[in-house]
Amino acid sequence: MASDTATVALAGMDANLQEDIDRALIALDGTQNKARLGANATVAVSLATLHAAAGAQGLPLFRYLAQGKPARLPLPEIQIFGGGAHAGRRIDIQDLMVMALAAASFDEALEMTARVYHAAGELMRDAGKLRGVADEGGWWPEFASNEEAIETLVRAIARAGFVPGDEVAISLDIAASEFGSGGLYRLGLDAKSLDSDGMCELVLGWLARYPIVSVEDPLAEDDREGMMRFTAAAGHRVQIIGDDYLTTSAARVQAAIADRACNAVLLKPNQCGTVTETRAALDLAKAAGWGCIVSARSGETEDLSIVHLATGWDAGQLKVGSFARGERMAKWNEALRIEEMLGAGAHFAGRAVLSLTQS
Ligand code: PGA
Ligand code: ZN
Image 1 (cartoon, helix red, strand yellow):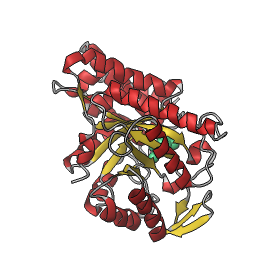
Image 2 (cartoon, rainbow, N blue to C red):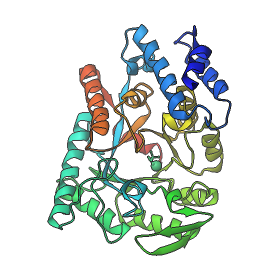
Image 3 (spheres, rainbow, N blue to C red):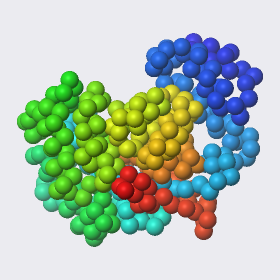
Image 4 (cartoon, rainbow, N blue to C red):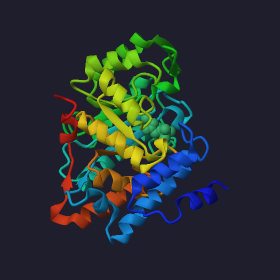
């Protein structure tokens, strides 16, 4: 029924006027959080509009979005071990990922990451701990502690033949809202309860001991002071991404810029529900010199739009899960196709995107 209403509301509108269509969708929904229509429904219509507009001009979506500027392939952030809610809470950290800093192209970044992914699988197999993959395709995290997962990832990078931190570095999504609220964090695997300061210290300790260049949601979404303390302590040398903390909301990004509560934003179009709102969050973040990471979801389809958003908008980074499963590989493959299409003229964001947050 909702889709009939949307058809009537949007019938006759010009697909080139993305903001008008998105405004009509927002008005039709009429709630603060797309509760009536659902963000998955509105984002589908919003993205279909974008595809129609690009198609009418005979342009691939990334080119339409780039508006004549050179498109730039993003640095991929790729999961090696899954965890948290995506792996039955076997470990507390949600994503243990790598970023191929030494790669000169998207193709090379995938090649390097594939080697780390396989090396990690071999380490698990040798330890008798290979149990298949988690929700987003990363290896199932059969570890005795959260720190053992990070240590194993460092070993996998080295086993693949790379210098950890220099050629391939670690990125963590702690997703702390999954095990923390009201200033109390319960780490199931480490059998520890920590207050906000304790949680800050724990993650800062990992940053000091391991080659980590990026951390997402180190504190819970309700822990504003914790995020501010954490960013004051580490924001000059590490990318600190707000996902649950910012919910792809321009208003939240603006508040966090003022608070200095992070220095990068995760952009999930179906979290806010329209292309225009996603773009608004990106624009604010970019203007503040923040990092921008376009991201897939844990429950994902094979839709490829986010690869084009990341490239055409020059977001700089792309997070899609691991190096396995069709809905993940479809996106990596699309980025490869774009790079191939651009040929010698292809630009790749590379490690430079991280220097934004490491002045
Ligand atoms: P979600 O996780 O899609 O389950 O929100 C993705 C992420 O936290 O980055
Ligand atoms: Zn996250």
